[in-house]
Amino acid sequence: MFSPTVRSRSTRRRPCCTTAQEIFEGIKAYRHADGSVHTFRPDRNAARLQASARRLALPELPSEYFIESLRQLVSVDERWVPSGADQSLYLRPFMFAKEAFLGVRAAQKVAYYVIASPAGAYFTGGVKPVRIWLSEDYARAGRGGTGKAKTGGNYASSLLPQAEAYEKGCDQVVFLNENHDVEELGGMNVVFVFKDGRIVTPESDSILEGITRDSLLQLAKDRGYTVEKRPISIDEWREGVSSGDIVEVFACGTAAVVTPIGALVGTDFEEEQPLGELALSLREELTDIQYGRREDKHGWLLRLV
Ligand code: PMP
Image 1 (cartoon, protein in one colour):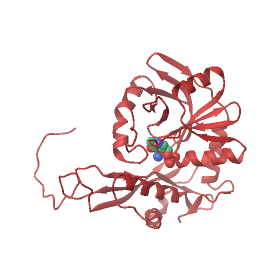
Image 2 (cartoon, rainbow, N blue to C red; image 1 turned 180 degrees about the vertical axis):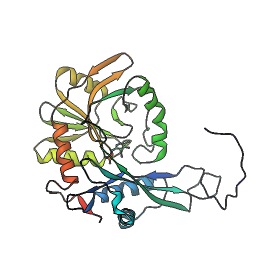
Image 3 (cartoon, protein in one colour; image 1 turned 120 degrees about the vertical axis):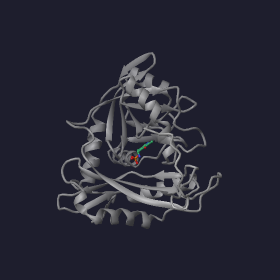
Image 4 (cartoon, rainbow, N blue to C red; image 1 turned 60 degrees about the horizontal axis):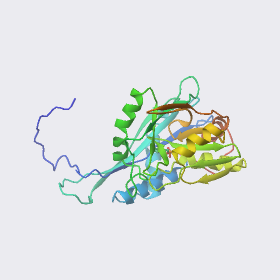
């Protein structure tokens, strides 16, 4: 609990920054059957960290340094990477300003760390559809804001809506923008599958460009699906489901990979969502690649150890 005790500490010994320049990434290391350890598309995480750095006025970490930092951490004790189905080592690289200065200006000094934790299966007992709370009172990010960056403030501002979602018996929140277009969940992108074989996912300058989404959409294109990145409004979602044009809705991200959306809940409605097969089959294909059980045709894996 926060205690209002004022402690005097030398800012020289404990440097900090009051302007909230903080960015991070989330990426996993996977153990293959032969014992080797691989990570998935780290160049994309490196590029996204650089884009976040530009937006938050932090220095851009070179990709080689980023990848080397993952390799070094895993190499400290590679037994940290668990083996077994859906087991992985979740890696969290982050950078923050650490300068003792009270004014609002871009800090000159920053710190970069990587921390890690073994991660088990996101869903125990198989993938479960989630109930989504439609947040009309809160926005995750505004136009021209930091929505496209992976920065702490975006996540801090989603905690209250997330707590409200739990109170309504839901697992996650879906955020809309000012035009009532669908943005994303607190930590996952959203994908819609249409009856005619189109796959639509929101395009906006205020959502995070998910690496899982990009990979799943590439796998879907390989299977002949047409992929559209464009704004999709909440009305199009609801009408598409009620007319049967939308046959599947799912969310995706590094942590859970793919999560079917089972219900959309608002203040005055609750609608079941269609659960199709594509989400689960793409999930299986992607995780097979990540765990080395299927050919990595796109060259997405990078061996760390
Ligand atoms: N949107 C948000 C807000 C996220 O935090 C995440 C998780 N990083 C995603 C989407 C999905 O991104 P990725 O597939 O790269 O994990």
